[in-house]
Image (tube, rainbow, N blue to C red; front, side):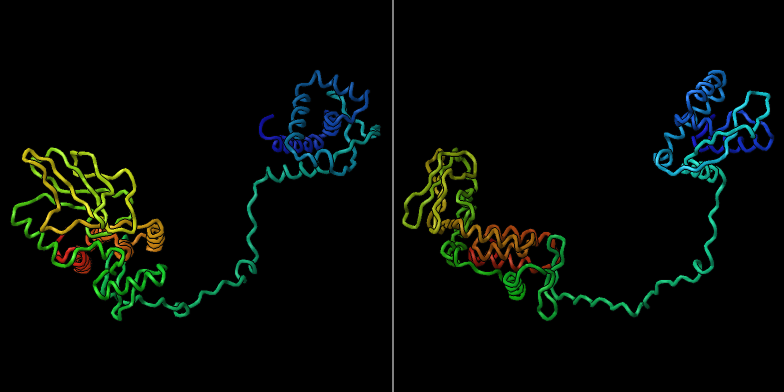
Length: 392
């Protein structure tokens, strides 16, 4: 036989019915089932196995039934209630069956009978019955509220001052209300509002002592420019720094073969000095002291002798180092700033980290090339530090 066990069972049952109608029977299916289930007594089993050895078709039937039992649920084969029915006796080929002399009843599990019926049903083509009219047409349909029932979202107020800031649009409305900084905290929002309304970053008492007096550095830069000098300190100057081992940078002096950096405190006590370096930057190995205003100079070695900058009439290059608690406060505030460059500039400026604030404002300028606001804030920061609007 070919096909699935259910198809073979359906085919066998149809053939069995046809054989009964024609009056020709071989081995009844009940005997095959009883043999597979081990329900034959010794005499019947010996007779059946003799026939089985000579009949390939009967062997195939036994194999198919065993395969079917494996495929069907175990409950249908072993645990379902049983029903009795009249079997057909096995006869030799060519002899008529004598139903009157059969006294043995074979038991067919009801689960297997049901499985056979299911097999026949599965074999027949099936089409779904149409749904009753009451189901197809009488079911209530969900009502859709009219468009007017959904309240329209309030329109966002137009911004009188708008800036792009790390993918968001921020600024002030026409009545001076801050927009675009939701979730930043009331204190930071208040400082941002004041910064945008006044065009000024917050001042820092922490860095006040490190900032040169207005006009002093301008005068020094003008003197340096008039004398043709290019050798000058770059950073840190007129600012606080967060690292206790900041990087010192300066411009090159033509003809210099080496440089040496010296850092002193407000009592002119040396707190750090470098070995001779040939680069234009140096970082101290040990932490610098905090809560002090520090000054630094760089000395260049040349064939004509040593040159030092800054030197009179240029002002000192002064800075201060934040304490660990101040650094922690800045770090927490930057987390509140949510990655905003404008908010970060406000945080840095309030802590006196003017170099960091200047870099954050440069990013805001790059994102808003047509706006004068970032440039105005940057110019105000430079005037506060150096007394000029076009300094470094």
